[in-house]
Length: 159
Image (cartoon, rainbow, N blue to C red; front, side):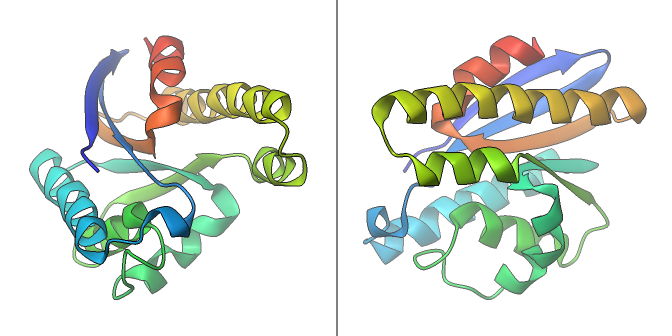
């Protein structure tokens, strides 16, 4: 599960975009691969040392991230485990930029057309919520952690 890493500059802010695979838990049947993916994200966070981490998670769920610090990435989210470990000893803001209602819409109707429409709409919400926070706050260096399937469209919007 290699990571996709892209850098985008937006009005003097360096946005490090980390794209990972975070599909359904059944996709993570290999515990070693999950640990490695989570470790890779954590290593990138340590190397980048961001002021803010934007994560593909609804804002109301951000307060629960710390509970993932000792969780197995094979049975939860490789991204959440990495972020929880990173913030356990760092003073960094974590901002959820996904839309809960759009996530739920995707789960209610699993037709290909609805999945594609939901993904496009979520890409816009993720990018929009990130941009709003960047415009309202002076941030020099941040990370946006999203699924690989969102990367191209989100990068187009942020660029």
